[in-house]
Image (tube, rainbow, N blue to C red):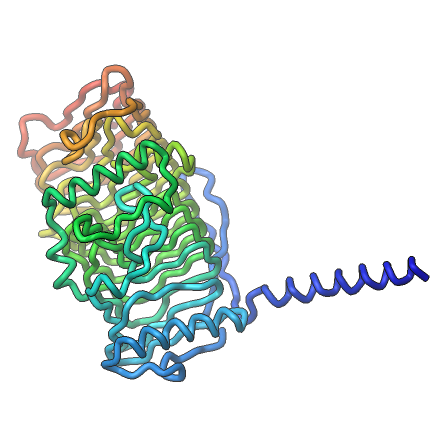
Amino acid sequence: MKTTKNIISLLLISMSFIFLSFKNEPTGIKTESIKVKAPFKMPTFTVPDFSNCKSFSIIDFGAIQGDKDKISKAIANAITAANKAGGGSVVVPAGEWLTGQVHFKSNVNLQLDEGAVLLFNDDPKDYLPAVNTSWEGMECMNYSPLIYAYQCKNVGITGAGTIKAKMDLWLTWAGRPAPHMNSLKRLYDMSYLNTPVGERTMVNDTAHLRPHLIQFNRCENIRLEGFNIINSPFWTIHTYLSKNILIRKLNVYAHGHNNDGYDPEMSQNVLVEDCVFDQGDDAIAVKSARNQEGWRLQTPSKNIVIRNCVVKNGHQLLALGSELSGGIENVYLHNCTVNQGAKMFHLVFIKTNERRGGFVNNIYVKNIKAGKIDNGILGIETDVLYQWKDLTPTYERKLTPIKNIFLTNIHAGSVKFVSNIQGQKEMPIENIILKNVSADSIRGDKKYIQKNTNKFYNK
C-alpha cells in the first residue's frame, strides 16, 4: 500500500513538472531559422517570428496620448500580460507616445505600427532605479537604457514605426568635464579591482554617463526589424553578452556624441542586413569589453555577418575595438555601400592599445563601394588610448594579436592612403591580404603605410 502511494505521488509530481514546463513555453510564437554563408563556419540559429502571435494594444492598458506616466505604465502592463500569456506583441498604434523606460520580459515583441512614434523623455529620473549595464566596455549600475532587456529570451522590436529620443538634456551631458572624467576613472579602477558590479554605482550628479537607446543584455534570440530610429543619448543599438540576433531593414539616424549605429559586444551569431545607417560615430562597431572586464567575462564577439547595408554617414563603416579584450573573430562584411559625400574616416578601422589584450582574427570585407574617405580604406592602430592615456596608468600590459584580415573588391574615391598598418614590434600584425582594393586618387605621400607587419599582400 505504501509503495502504491509513493508511485502515485511520483506520478503527480512528474505531471506537475510537465504542466509547468508547458506553461513556461512560449505559445503562438514561431521561429525563423537563419542560415548564412560566410568564409568561416557560421552556425545556423533561430530568432522569434511574431507575425501571427497575440496582440496587446497599449491603448487597452490605459495609454493616453500626451500622458507620459499613463503611457509608461500601459507599456509595462502590456509587456507583463504578453509575457504571462506565453508570448505576444505589445502594439504601439499610430500617433506620438511620450514615455519613460521600456523594460522587456521574455517572449515579448514591441510592435511599432506605421505612423507610431515612441518618443522617449530626456528626464534622467525616468530611467531609475539604476540597472546592470555597461559604459564603454565596463559594467556598472547606471541609468537604464531607454529600451532595456536583461536575461530575456525570444524578444524583438518590429514594425514600420519610429523610436525617437528627446535630446535636450542628454546633449548637455555629452562633454568631458572634470567631474565626468573623475567618475570614469573611478569606474576604471573598480573594474581593475574586480569590484562587484552591484557596487559600481554611477548614478550621481557628476558622472553623467548617458544611457544607451536600446540594449539587450545577456539575451538570446533577438529580432529587430523594419523600424526607424531618430536620435540616441549614447550608443544606439547595443547587444551585450547576447546571441542569436537578427537586425534587418532598420533605418537608423543618430548624430549625437558617441552615436554608433550598432555595437555587438561579446555577442555571437549575428546577422545585420538591408539597413541604412546615418551616424555621428561608427556605423558598426564590434566590441568585447575593456581590459579586465573582457578577461573576466571571456566571451568573444564572433560569427557576425553584415550585408547589403547603406551608410550615409559614419566615422567608420566597420570598426573593431577599441574595447576588444574578450576577443573578436569571424566577422564578414560584404555588399555594402557608403554614399557619396559621407563623412567617413576609414572603411575598416581596427583599434587597440597596450592595455587591451584580447585578439582580432578572421575579418573579411568584400564588395564595398565608397566615395571620398578622410583617411583610408584600412587602418590598424595599436596605440589608441584617447583621453585614457593621461587619465589612468597602465595597470597591466597585454598586447593584442591581430591576424588574418582579408579585403576583396573594394573601391573608394579620394583617400589619403589605401592602408595604414601600425603594429607593435613585440607583436607584429600578421597576414593582411588586399585583393582588388583601389581608389581613384591618393592624397597622401604613400599608398601603403606599414610598421611591424608580417605577411602583407596586395594582389
